[in-house]
Image (cartoon, rainbow, N blue to C red; front, side, top):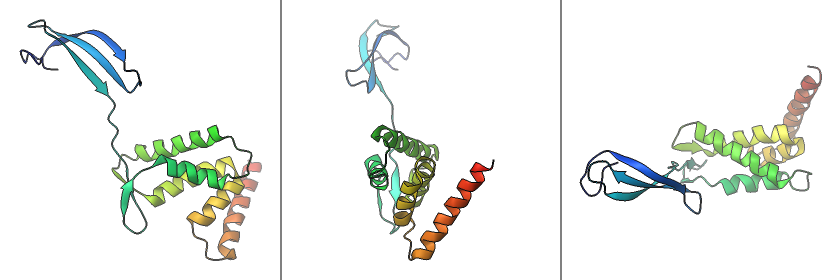
Length: 157
């Protein structure tokens, strides 16, 4: 960090503390050359995720939309809200771990489905029926059969 007074590149930290919102660290520094004291702020820079929708349009990722989808799928199920928030956090973390600036809405749907299948099978089917846009009862039955086979396999292991 260059001194704003003399442009010397070495300074020492005298004091560090979080800002009131806990969103940054405030550091008081002293230039090792001229003794000038100045303040710097350190913040985490999160790259915005851009969602590429099915029609090709783009919008900034909104975790509230993921949470709303989970809430709809889990409506009238005995699942605490805090659990849905945790699952939303996991979906967002998985998306950020892809290290891509743009993600498809399809990727989001797949991550949500992975969370729902381990959380609640009824909520999974509700979400899948909208996400996969089932055209008829046969597609729904195929998904239910796959879900049943998966449950049976897990019981026998």
